[in-house]
Length: 321
Image (cartoon, rainbow, N blue to C red):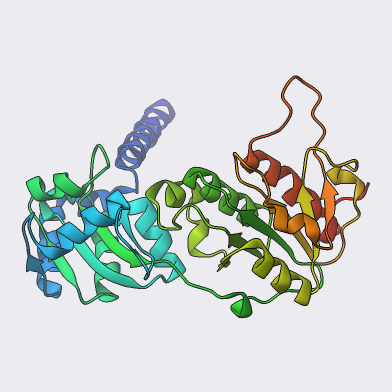
């Protein structure tokens, strides 16, 4: 073969490889998983034959229970919540959360990835159900459901379960009302490397769907403990050796003027009423976040971000002022 012909043949081979790789990437997980997706019917059959499933309809107790959890309207002392779809179920699976039930709609399972995750969840749970596409639509919230839904339990902690180091930082949420704000501050605490979130005068259920969504999974791994009121929470913090800081726009000292360095607790108040009066009668320090525009304060989640990172970075030796 002449040199130009060989070069042209090599270019054709390379071009063919690029096309094949692009096709595999288009399927999202590579050629081999792409082939598995082509045989998804066989994969689903193996999944359904590997475990005992109960085929149920819209009136079954597990479907009604899922509706109740979705509506957040009934007592939920065991802190159960509904996890729909691959993203949140991957998170709770990796966090090792306890499952009450797994519910599948086989007709909506379209990929090997979803089937593999469903198998892992089914291995950890003995309450397994299947429903029709019509029944699944009644309890699904995703626009394009992937046929996977579970009911899981949030972790539960007491303050005594928590372990603190000499430079631990915690957030205290006092009467915060909006579930999305609570979830956001859980996410902030996780991102800033805080040790725990403490909740007193709780107004939002920890299992509220908007709270779980806003936490982006941090609720599954970051410890949190609840107190009936601010006095009980303050007693526990003082006994554990924490310095307590109240975020208050009236404070004369800004958040960055404190050195921190020891056990640090920031109290964030209600969106409407601020921090409850009980805290101000205790041995606490006040701090403010300077406002240079027309607004007099930040959203509570944003304020929590500012002070959490300040103290965390200083206590980790990563910020010096």
